[in-house]
Image (cartoon, rainbow, N blue to C red; front, top):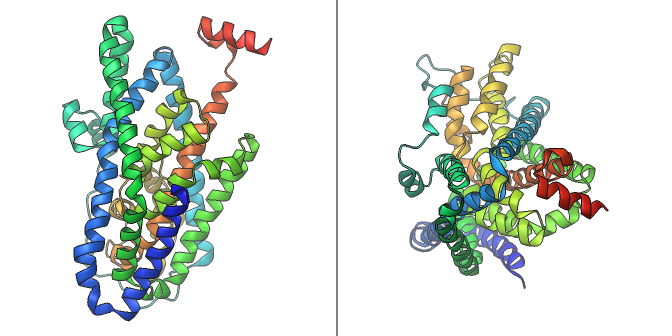
Length: 418
């Protein structure tokens, strides 16, 4: 069996094993999870994260040096942000609409507003933007702050472009880091089936399927919104003539790993490898768009934030006025771009959405237990959305007029057409 199949089998066996532990051997869960499942799963995530920072930084720098000048970098970024905002808006609308139509919180009793409902101060947009600028690039790298790493790579890329030949030794070093990290990743992936088995078994064993049964309508609503968003991206791929079958086959390893780890950051190295080697996306586009999308593009978070806010308003019987819906929509869209790519992060940032919308923060506790079981699906749609937006950029750039391209590229394009 190839690695993708092995990971999928490990996922299925892990679900079965976790269910068996939860239903038949509950007294053994603490021992097995504490000394076997949780440590193996955490160790695997740390191994994957070990190569995330070097691959992101080196691939971004290599991608930026292949792009012809700052104007093209700006054009790439502007086009990506345009498609990010539009597709994230679609995700958000799906999450809100699904919750409004299915009404998963209507009829849930036992929740009343207290007079001293906890509120948190939502971070200002200006403060968040300032925080993207690292004081020390080495600190950004050591802490694994992807947004700061991307900003650092942009500045280094500008410096490399200006330094010309004097930057060649540094770029040789960066290219070596990239290839070494790829080889390390290929070794780490050999233990992926064990890591995925441990992660999913731990979740099912400790959380149990009873919680799913109690919040079944809530889970089905989230899955429905995620599935519709997947269909939307399939339609986009058809419009772009990008072969959806090849797309899903090529990225199957990354999507299965994303489901098992529930971490967009952890799946980044595999996604970069899959979309270049299997799907054949241009390295120039992939090395720029995929790391940027991993840091910013969160369709799963956009769906969850809108859906959860409506759900919490329903269980607390808070009227859904146009102003409340507007507050939910705007805050959810902004928060989706600042959600870290780690398990459970969307649930953490949901406090900002609830605070901005005037909804009770106690509602987070209602969905906290079920979140890890649905986190894998949200990560899969993050992977799909990130990849499709990279393909959108590739197709968009393919239509760039020859006069807007560098002279040598325009000559080559003309000769290819001839």
